[in-house]
Image (cartoon, rainbow, N blue to C red; front, top):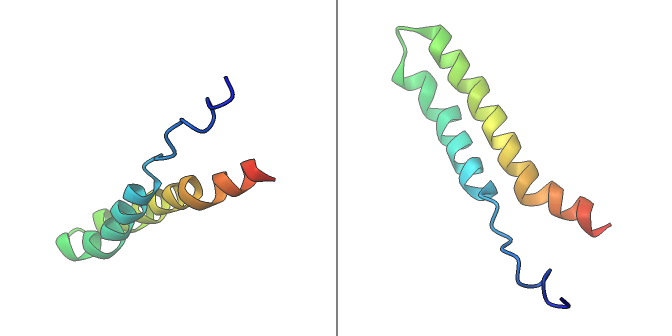
Length: 66
């Protein structure tokens, strides 16, 4: 079909992952101040989740076009 690629959904959830990662990055260390290891895990988790979302939203589409 000629229009098969045109009709595909381009919503991969990347923007939601970026928002979730940013929330984890900023809120997790403040929610658990008495347990610093959970704050550090939340900090790294936010970076990883935000990085995956950034890749899905911006990088993957540019690599496919080239």
